[in-house]
Image 1 (cartoon, one colour):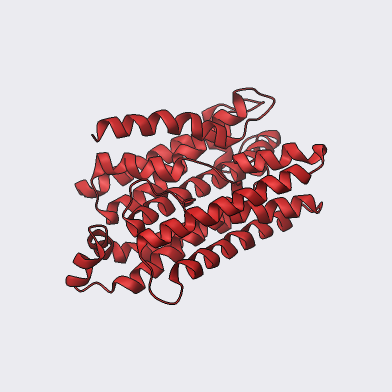
Image 2: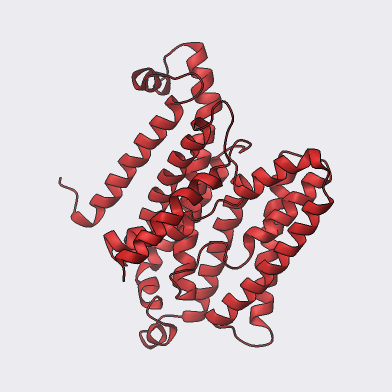
Length: 324
């Protein structure tokens, strides 16, 4: 049965994601051919190849895919919520709260799960803080939420600078890598992948309502959409996606800003198609960026946020030029 045209882009993006993952697990300090990689994935191959791919490279690749998908979907949701095409997952200060939590944990000398848990707790604190301040004693508007987020993000930035100024020089490199986005210490990818799939399944039935909301709250209310509960749901889901992504890889920039823009120019503005496409395209982009980060100056590794910035800045400028 032929695949209907609206779903062909998703199939193409799914294939691109698989190819990107195949390239990622094949390239490294010890190169492994694509044929050998496929044999390892299907259960054969040498013991060394199985260790390199299944225990070292594949978890990092899946973590990169999950992080990119989380950020891209969160960016698309934020742009609908704020009716602002320049909104990204970090615009409301979630990454600042996560960074403060993670840096405090590093400053205390803990590592691993405690750093990730502290980052997630900081992101959730930032979510509650921004929502509470923007809501106040009455209702909130997208512009009020955006301004509150910008001010809170500036406050987090000041705290981050204070923490870095008090940190011993021996601990600064690890902190700076985390702030620029780093997947080298990413733990299991499965929580991120599960949250990404769960949120995509939750927002798909809301596609029509999101399309209407993107045109304005008054039009959405006139067409029977429950605007306020929908906006709360979008904010909470975008916050959960962003907090999970920052917990996994630190502050990786531009993915949540560029990917939704790029897809809207190609696919239109139907959220029922854009949101799953963002999950696939964002994951693919970050897998390729992380592969470059591992091999550009091998055996040293660059923070993946550096690669996404180098890709994202010219790409975003080009997209702005195209959409004049």
